[in-house]
Image (tube, rainbow, N blue to C red; front, side, top):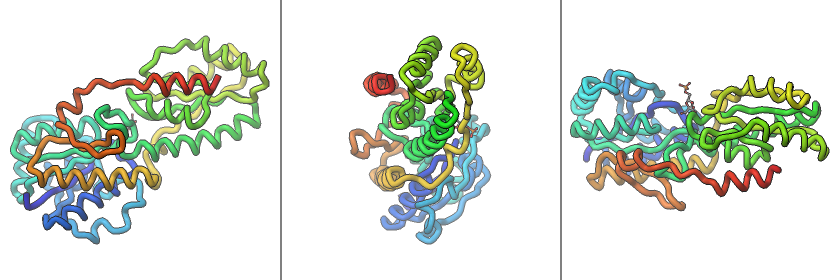
Length: 319
Ligand code: F6P
């Protein structure tokens, strides 16, 4: 292993820059030539590759987004596209590739490794939807962004004695809504992992009024959807004024939290070590506080275990 490249792929996540910084600086420390690829797999196919020194990653640990830009690349989903990418990597003399992204990006890395390029993935996505790891880079920052918004929405919902519904990101994974709901003290959360009965929400709102609660907070995961319609229905059924807020891409930006910066630095270091140990088609993660590495296909096939305990506790605390 003489030269390693790093790219970011899929949706960006706060902390990706901290991971790039760690990969580049650890690689340089170990005597490797370090390269950056702009615009994910799309830039890889187009040869958008450049050498990175220590200075190239200065002043980025605190920044959201990704200095390498990111993209979702259709061409790379084809064998022809991947063959082109492998060829480009060989042209640049690159032996190993670090891919920072989510499940789609990891699938690409596994397939690329079959073409003779050693690959390793670092989980960078706000969704926290990769079950082989307890946390993905960006989740903690997104959660704090959600909390900040929830705190502000509470102020206005309190003043007007309204119901506030907040839709958060996470695609098919309800973790942002679940943990955001727990930390934000939401009365109800709607997540794709759990069936729900709207009557239960209405009942809680009626009971809350009776108990003297002045507002009611509902967190809805993006994968459930129907947020604006739900707001109308709540108002019709309960008679309580209701406002919906869809937080959207604001959750993907901002300075990464200390947790995400440290996680990204630790994972970046391990990713370089994994390649130096001669392994390929691996992903790094964190389990019970320890940094681990796992085979990509194995990691992607692991069944998702929903945290019932947290869900039930959240419901108990908010009733
Ligand atoms: O995977 C991260 C994520 O932010 C999801 O939560 C969301 O569904 C999706 O990306 C949005 O993607 P885009 O930025 O392409 O609209």
